[in-house]
Length: 202
Image (cartoon, rainbow, N blue to C red; front, side, top):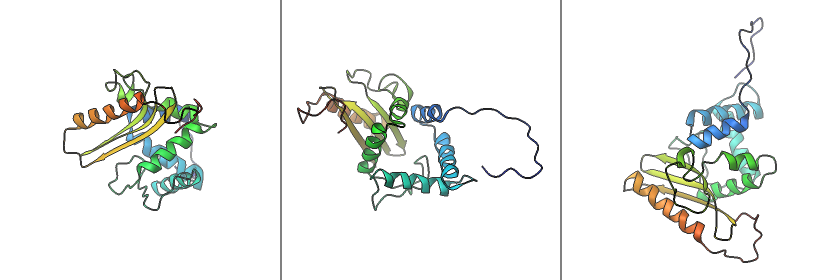
């Protein structure tokens, strides 16, 4: 990203894919390259060209604060989550998911971009036997596994969950199976508050 030099000659022009589709490709298949490029693009849009990781990370931090999810311990070092310097709590991620799902501007696109348990993306081979429809984003690094998203309980009320396992001693398949079992129990849970509106997000 950057200003076009004076006297430059246009060689090719094409229309890029809509942001909603790019986000879906990012989330469905956990594409780290797309995540980093969208982060730079966000930085350029917020603070001006050229786009950079520094601007993008600053824009991400601003958004986290704007939805009330900021925490003193948070460290956002990149757009993909690959940096070992990243420090983001489960509470922060849950607050971001809640705010995103409730957003009138982009909530439907956000939820549609999340992989569906047992159906597509990085969850295509997981949670196939669940009755509930799980929408969640996976995350894997060496000895680290995570899953964050939304699952309806037995009454159809959407529940937000965030599971992060650090320093796992078992195999990645065993850790994922344990995470999936927890989500299955959550989906089978009875509502904690009988009068909770069906459209609420807990």
